[in-house]
Structures are given as C-alpha cells and as structure tokens.
Image (cartoon, rainbow, N blue to C red; front, side, top):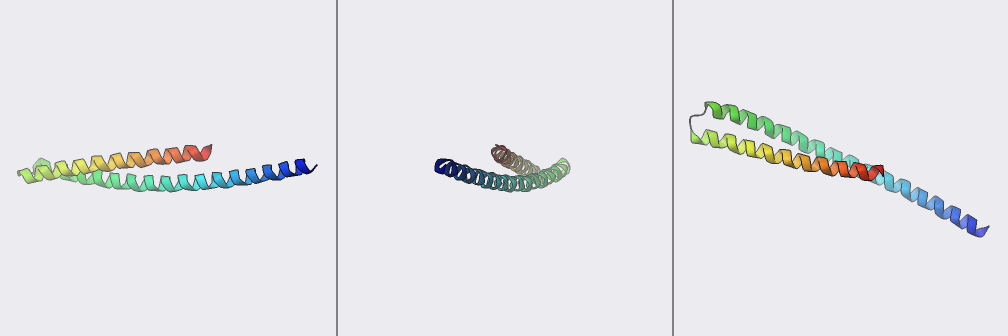
Length: 99
C-alpha cells in the first residue's frame, strides 16, 4: 500500500511539473510571437521606406538619390530576413509548447 501511495504522489508531482512546464513553454512561445510581430512591423516600416526611396530614385537625377534608394531597399531586405528568423523562432517555440 505504501508503494502505491508513493507512486501516486510521484505521478501527481510529475503531472504538476508537466503542467508548469507547458505553461512556461506557452509563455515563451507568446514572447517569441510578440518579438516576431515587432520585427514584422519593423520590416513593414523598412519596406515603406524603400518604396519611398525608390519613388524618389525614379525622379532623382543624382547618383546620391539612386544610392539612397539602393540602401533603403537593402535595409528593407535585412529587416524582412530578421522578421522571418523571428517568425521561425516563434513557430519552434509554439511547436515545443504544443508537445
């Protein structure tokens, strides 16, 4: 009887730990999702800046104007790549929390 009681208490303890672990993983997934959303907003902002710079470059007659458009487009690409990385991190955390 004592062994059954000890086993039951151990199982209950493991269940509680598993629930806490799931909650912690879910919290981490939510934080990663928030980070991904922030990076996506930054990428959208950079894309808008690139679009504006491209419009200016279309009418620019100087090399500096065209170079500014290229720099803005490169920054938009980097921001989009970073946002994609954060989205992958968030997806991994979400998968981990689900299991």
